[in-house]
Every structure is written in structure tokens, then in C-alpha cells.
Image 1 (tube, rainbow, N blue to C red):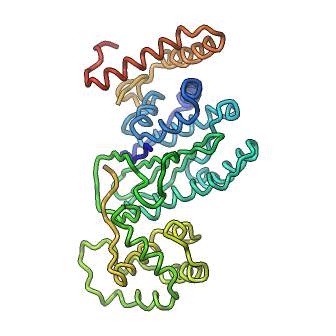
Image 2: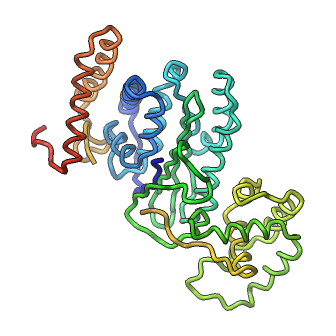
Image 3: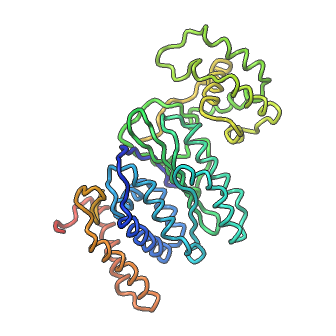
Length: 369
């Protein structure tokens, strides 16, 4: 399982039309080659790797420091494979803003064509978003959610949140294969520039807190409300992540009425409760600490190459002729391989093996353009 988080500075501007059209074509050729060589599951594995995804965005022509690489690269790939989903066995759903809310419908539409049950995929989409927006409260609010999956039900998620206070974005990667739990250490590979205190209910040290929160959700709402009403008289330390400002009595009572009438079997089931948002879960975490002494973890889970230039001219302007030549090279290599002439595809394989050997040896590649 390769999953992770990447920290990105927010950066203005967007890909011009002439560049996005090329990005779509190149993303399609890269996806077709990966599927032809390794199968559609390999596309999921690579998208879930934050380092590979960043390099993918840079190859497509986006700047390394631009948060727009996430939405644009996902959009280019989704548009690039449109119409080829059945042939590739690879499907894409979701996107930025309102498009992210259409993810379940898009998953269901694809599954109706393949004859597969969409329910597990829809659940994976919703839970991954709920975890990164609610169970992991690190200061970033999700605004982008892309869901990629194969015909046999494998999946990966690339989603991004924004922190308006410090002008940063954080990208979250998920890979379904090998995922042991949605609510305990779902992120196995983390990369970012900065770590900070966070309410991390998916940390392994939050197991007791998750159990206590789930137990409290089964308690009559009047008892929980009475307990939380006393919080303003408590002398909480300044550094505490949870205090009375986190409580919205009306919303909390609504959720508790639902969970008391329909007791959740575990924390994952509680997390999927309609209406359970970050503030409600923070209030329950505080109640769990007061009643059971089960404190939630506050550990932040977050622990480039240029092929064609960047959209803003960094590190140099996009070379359109070179970009088009790259697309043609991929397309011709795949066409010739299908005709039994695989010399160019073999050359690409040898180049890939050479690059891997250089990386393993820690040596620098030869200089030159």
C-alpha cells in the first residue's frame, strides 16, 4: 500500500487552453502505456504515490510549487481516458468543487456499464473523504476529490484540502489494495514541508478514543448534553486542541439522537453517520476524554524533474514543439507495438530500467539537455 500526504503552497493562475489540451493528450498516452505494460492496477498504484504524482504533474507542464497541479493533472487524466474506459479497464470520477459531489453518481454510472456492484466503491469514496475532512482535523478543508478505479474493483483516491489561514494546500493519497482499515493509520507514506498539532482520530494511539467516542454516541443525548454544558466552568490549558467553542449543541443533539436510536457498531460506522462533521466529532472527542480519560492523538500524520517546462515559465517556458513530440513518440510507440514492431517501446523500457538503476545507485544522470 502506497498512500501519502503532500504539502503544497497555493499558487494563482490556471493552465491555458492550449496547454490543457496537450496535457490531456499526454496523460492519455501515459495511461495507455502503463496499462499496456503493467495493467490498470499499476496506474492506481502510481497515482497513490505522492512523489510519482508530483512528477507526473511536472511532466504534463505544471509548476512544482503550484497547488493547481492536483486538480489539473487529475482533470487531464480523467478527460484523457474518456471514451477509453472499457478498453483500458480504468475509470475516473469526481473532481473539484461541485464535481466532487457527483462522484457517487459517476461511479454508479460506470458500474452499470460493467455490471459490477458500485456500493463498495461509493463507500470507499465517501469514507476516504470523511476521514481526511473529519477524523483527521489538520486545518485543511477538502475541495477536490478524484476517485480512480478498475473493472475488478481496485481503487485509489487523490484529494486535496485548503488552509485559508496560511495559504497552503495538502494533498491526500489513498490506495485500496492492502488497506487494512479506514480508521487506523490509513496513510502509510507521508510527505510534507511542515508538521503541526492536529486532532488525529485515525492515529494508532487514538484507538481508545475511537472506542470511547463510539460508546458515547450510544448514550442518551440528554446525558451527553448535560456533561458538555458544564465545559465553560472547566479550566482548560491554553494549548488544548479541544474546548467549548467546538460545540454546536443543536447539531450535536441531532447526531446523538440518530446514533442513540441506531447505535453504530464501531468508529467507522459512526464516522459514516449523516450530519457528523468535524465540530461534532471534536465535541465527542472532548466528552470521551472527560468521561473515559481517553485522549485522542494530536500527532500530524504528515511525515522534481521537469520535462517540458511550467505554465508560468518556471523553471522555463513550456516548449510546445518538444511537448507535441513527446506525445507523438508515445502514440507511435504504442501503435507500432500493436503492429508487432516494438523497437521504440523496447527503447522506452530500457530508458526506464536505466533511470531506476541510477536512482538505486544514488548516482546523478549525465549532464546535458
